[in-house]
Image (tube, rainbow, N blue to C red; front, side):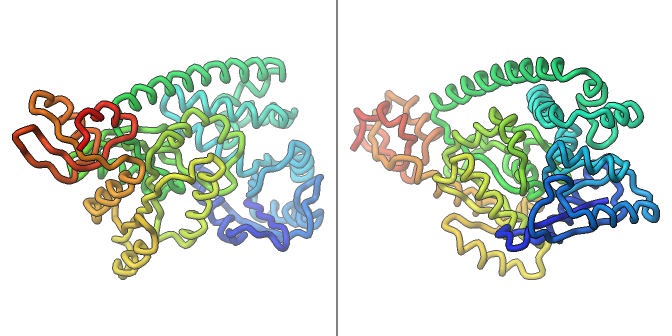
Length: 411
């Protein structure tokens, strides 16, 4: 049973009905069968049960006819609210955060991803431990909301869980340091980094596969892929970029999850350009795009060039409309990642956006310094090259950190 609530006068761009529809898709991804839903518009949040007493009674009455054994709320609940609702309804009560964490536990495939999810789960569950959780965990091992580390760990005391949180935090700090060293090596190479961002299920992994043959899992499910993947991609000019696929965003993204995935999200912080993939066919495409922008602003990375890829135009009755919409953005392009439509134009847009983060230079490099010519072609953007008695003349753009290497040859 799904439950949605919204304060009257809320400035959220999401309609309550649309948010509940997304919650149903999340539940389906977690393997839950949704038998019904209800919603309420509130003057204020009830500190005891989130929703009003009358709505709690209504849910109780519906249980006999619908036979549900799980109630999922569309907003994060306090430990007190969960405890009171479980006592009143005599079923497991989850909120959106617990559901998302469950899906992440299901899809984490690398050691790093598993660590991040496990930490977020423990941080979420620690203040919510109750006898009911312990009792139900023995009955429903592997059930939704109990997947991952929770099945047996919910039976240990809070002190043991706090010890595990500390251990996980230490391990993830080592991961963060390792990632920082890896990114430092990439910076020394000077290869521009493009981070793919977007709402979950917008087609990011499909696009990464189309651009690089990465072989990343791409399914029509929310959060089908969790772990970041980086691949080298060659632009039309011959220059190389590092393209990184990141975890998808979603509205009401739990703050605990953002904190746990700090090491992964730092990949976005080091990007020269962001590639924002939008599912143009989704009924809430505008709201999803706004949500992504808000998350990027919270991460402090909304100050760099953004290429907007309006995806899935092959599903539109009139793809020309998508072209008109793409023209509204400085680096907009309409594409179909699945059918590789608009890919060449997208690569051109990426190259144009990268020039904003790079320095225009003209150099004349002696033929004896062929390694510098090769580096310019590989890590910069060559717009024109000519041959002269003095050497190779290259016009284009270089990453700022590489400019000192070419200072002696600047024209």
